[in-house]
Every structure is written in structure tokens, then in C-alpha cells.
Image 1: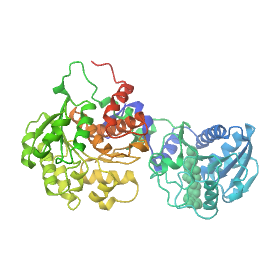
Image 2: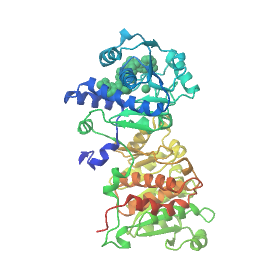
Image 3: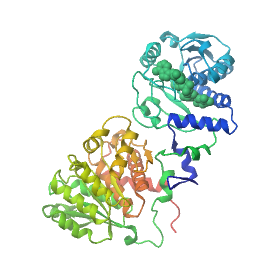
Length: 509
Ligand SMILES: NC(=O)C1=CN([C@@H]2O[C@H](COP(=O)(O)OP(=O)(O)OC[C@H]3O[C@@H](n4cnc5c(N)ncnc54)[C@H](O)[C@@H]3O)[C@@H](O)[C@H]2O)[C@H](O)CC1
Ligand SMILES: [K+]
């Protein structure tokens, strides 16, 4: 087990660690300090690139390797050598002078021994596959000049492109491109993925990412102090509230979901259904008087309680068995909802704030953050989409999604789930998980309501907030993927059991 941030991450979660380009450079250096020559790292990296290029080459023969002026290019020279030794027709094109190459890259260029042409758009003509070894972790500014022209030619062609480490032009730390960027068919990277391999548009630009072991020992991760992970069951399964033989519905918590008025009750029922399906022992919808008939007509195992205003909600939450509350969807934006949020936060129950519960504080975020900070130990999760996020955290509206979510979690004191195709879950202490299993058809009305219910249901069962938010986001994506296109929000809770079975938790004890 590796202890990090007072959180025990199972050793099988080590594979989920995400390293920034700087952290990756540190991993390289630590590996060298521990006895693996950097040339060996590059040899191993280039050999893996050659393997992946051969896979893409298929029946073709002509490989063009585009090399940049640094060690990304060094990887390319190694790959060229292996591909030529394997019988491919290999052409290398280099940005800059061969004599200007330094260090490991210069050594590998020397070992290549074959011709090296100047980098130019025409270099890719007739290629059956192109290896993009121009820029990797050392990118410092947008591509320009001939590199930009080559990228433009590549993206206009249909030739398969294998990117080395990251597609040239992509910032491996942020997943963003500040200028021309290669649209790769596949990417091969080394030791661990970077946040930019999972964050959009990086994930789309990389294509499938292959992670090769090049001889860097996992032990370096403890020295680096990993703060970001890819979201997957290995990250949170040890904290997942699998049912126990001696359990009963009261031992599995009681989630409360606050309903909107009569014409806006579906969101609460979607959340409630999600909370029940994910395992909360009991779920109650708290309904304003005018919505009682419509909610009552549509609820079965989910219970119903009437409340009228913040005082009424406070009265319900005096019953501490209701230990998790979800509010926001379809409540309406304005002071009444702000009062409901204040009541929920004051109750001590684990709280999930979504939609209108967030937007209602758009003109006074610090009021919300003060209420959240009042009990920092409590489990509070915010689940904004980009629009709600921009209203609450206007200063963090642009830039790297990972950094924005972390900044928001630190400022608010809550777990922040910044939703999207690359949902980021961030904790105030800097821990973050990036989720990459959500299919595009998850973007459907009400899906966010179900996600809030999954979070509330896991919190009700006592799961720690960061782990609960990561698990809920992953289950949400997995249920959508399992169902397939044509998904509507109502299908998510009903597909969850199939996903939970596949997770195959420990035999009940
Ligand atoms: N043992 C090792 O070092 C290993 C390294 N790996 C590979 O190394 C690269 C990172 O190499 P690095 O030399 O740091 O940077 P790049 O090759 O990505 O960039 C080259 C060089 O280019 C300059 N530069 C940056 N941006 C631009 C730009 N827009 N236009 C022109 N020039 C630019 C800058 O000076 C850079 O230094 C890593 O990605 C791996 O592929 C192996 O993976 C493992 C062993
Ligand atoms: K590259």
C-alpha cells in the first residue's frame, strides 16, 4: 500500500497515477539515480514506439519518422532503427540540424546511421504510417514555422499517425493545445499517463493511449507524491460500501432528496432512484405541498415527506438518521433555495449540491463557501457542469480543467465534481481524479440528477466524500456505456445493477 495525502491507495491503484510532464521528468531522473541509464530508458521507449508503429503499419512498408530537436526526437531515432531492422522502409525527417542534437538524442541519432532529411511537409508523402516524435514533454510554446506546416499537412492527410508521448503541440499537463496540434491515430507514452491524455481535447487528439514500462520503478511514485489519478474502481473499491451479511436497511443510511415544485419534480425522483439503486438503505423525497400528489403517484420504495420552506426541511433533518441530502435539481434559483441549502449544511448531514443549489449563490459564492467551511470535516460535494461552475467560480472560468477544479475545491472547502466528457473530481487537499469512461450519449437530460443521487446514496452508506464522488462518477459513466446509445436518464439507475455485478465486490461477510 502506498500512503499518500493521508489516503491509502491500493497498490493496484498505482497504475492509475497521472504524472505531469515535470513529474515525469522527475521520474526519469529518479530512475537514473537508482541505476537505470537514461539511454536505456530511451532505448526502451523507442522500442515500444517501433512495436506500436508496426501494429499500425499493417501491410504497409514505408514509415516516416518525424523527429524534433530533443529527446522526443531521440525516441523517434530509436524507433526508426528498430523498424528498419524489422524490414520496414524507414525515412527520418529532422527539425533542425543533426549536429545541434544533444545528449541522449544525439547518441540515438548517431546509432540510427541512416539518412536524415530536413523536416518538411513533403516528408510525409507516400508514408504508410507516420511516427510523430517532434515534441513531447518539452513543449514550451505553440508550434510555428515548418513544424506547424507539417502538422497541418499531417492533419489534412489520411495517413495513420503514431504520437510519441503526446501528439506534438499538445500540453501533456493540461490536455490543451495553444496552437497547431497533431491529431493522432494512437499514442504511446511511458511509465504513467499524463493528465493531458485524459483531459479534452487531449484525449480525443491522442486516440487510444498505450502505456509502456520503460524501466522506471514504481517506487519513484512515493517520492513524487502523486496527487492525480485516472478514475477507476481500483482507486476507491476498498472504500466501496459493499453490502454486509449483518447489514440491514438502517445500517445502509438514509438519503433525502429535496423535490422542486409540482411541475418540476422529475429531477428529485431521478436522484432518489439513483440513491436507492446505488445502495442507500432508505431514500425519502422531501416534497413541497403542491408536489405531494405528483410525487406520491410515482414513488414506491422511495418514501415521501412533506416540507414547507427551510424550517420544514430543517425539521425533517433533525432526524439524524437522514444522514445524506441531495438538493438543487429543479428547486428554482433564488433566496428560497439558498435558505434550503443553508438548512441542509447546518444539519450536519452529508450534502450534495447540484444545479440550482449552486446557481442560487452565483452572486454571493462566498456566502456558500462560508457555510461549507463552517464544518470542514463534513462530507460536502458540489457537482457543477461548466455553466454552473463559471457562475460560482468566475475567476476560474478558463484554463486547465484539472487546475480549475482543484482551485474551486480549495476555495470552497468541498469536493468539486466538474462534469463533462472528462469529469474531474477534486478535493480541497489537492487530490484529483480524472474520469474517462463517459460515452457521449451520457449527455442527456436528467443524467446529472442521477449522478447526484449516486453520490448521495454512497455518502448515506458512509463512503468518504472524495471516494464516493469518484465512485459515483465512474459508475455513472459505466452504466451509460453498458446501456449504449439511446440512453435516457431513467435508464441509468436501472442499468447500475449490471455494472455493480461486473465490479464483483467481495463475497458478503
Ligand atoms: N531519458 C529521457 O530523457 C527520456 C525522455 N523521453 C522523451 O523525452 C521527451 C521530452 O524530451 P525534451 O527534450 O525534454 O523535450 P521535447 O523533445 O519534447 O522538445 C524538444 C525541445 O524543443 C524545444 N521546443 C519546445 N517547444 C517548441 C516549439 N513550439 N517549437 C520549437 N521548439 C520547441 C524545447 O527546447 C524542447 O527542449 C519526452 O516527451 C519523451 O518522449 C522518453 O520518454 C523517456 C526517456
Ligand atoms: K510527439
